[in-house]
Length: 158
Image (tube, rainbow, N blue to C red):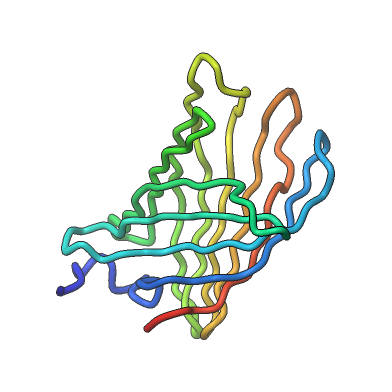
């Protein structure tokens, strides 16, 4: 399936990536996790995204799904739905680099009535050759913006 022209800067994301990460936050104990993310080209001007994580014992921890949009002019948008009762609308920049790209996003969060309060998020994705790194920061439950997750991935398919 042909990739939309606007997605050419992030074409290398298409596929499945796996790696390890670390989670920290002032209100929780630091933890390690395994993660799988998949970006799928469905023939539209966005990529479909699915993320899943597991703890050290292999028990499921988190999942989320959404869409990565690259409208052009160095901009990026990431729209996510989380089973914890939040949706995120993240907007930011895409900078192409010699080895890939760097995406930096700031998010607005909508919480369901029963969800823990998350006020805002920040996410980054950096592709450098065959290495993909991501970070996720959040302001939540009365804590100002803090780093929450850091992960590094390797491609699992081509």
